[in-house]
Image (cartoon, rainbow, N blue to C red):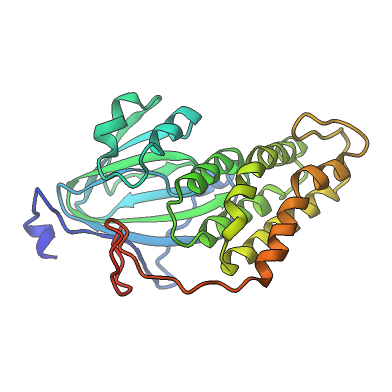
Length: 297
């Protein structure tokens, strides 16, 4: 609280992603106006940030999820946002652990917009919104994150970026959200959406095979859920012929299994039998052993 009253302009101390439990009569939910066009899947995750003036949160993605944020009290923020185009994601992954992303790549990012928010308005950020925040007046910010069927295309691009950049020390988090995204995409009978799901999977498949050769068992369970979801999708009756990587034919299901699932299933089977090596606690920035303390994001 001292930092809120007397912020250090050169090195502000802040709290990020603190999980909160609210009473039943006080909740943050997805507004009906948004639900009509983006349907939340499963429970939303509620968290809060506490940032003093001068706090700058550099360019980042909130994984493959939609989000809604709102300032509380006198807090005010400036938010800069960019779409997750292939070009912007390539810039973001040039050096994903660098602490001065905006200074290096901000002038090369395309399609950016700037908004100012306070407690009177909430801000929706769809899946794939690259963003950074600057705190103008210190205070709390609350928000929710969720996956939606409508975010599957941007979600697939974010998933690819996160796999390449290896941002999460525990990759099971990435696969959990990706599995939720796939399950959400199966809601309803939207064949155009389902077609995109299969095409995105085909695009990501070679990367998955490369990245999944040394996965911990915690991730293997989520991969099994991904495969199970794809199998459920393939079993559906299709009024129109489906395609994934260019193949269009009567044996589409067999082609998809042979070309885009079989090798992964073999890796999953092998990983399920492998014993994980004990993990070492390393400092995120310097690679030094920390004894489990880690670093705050």
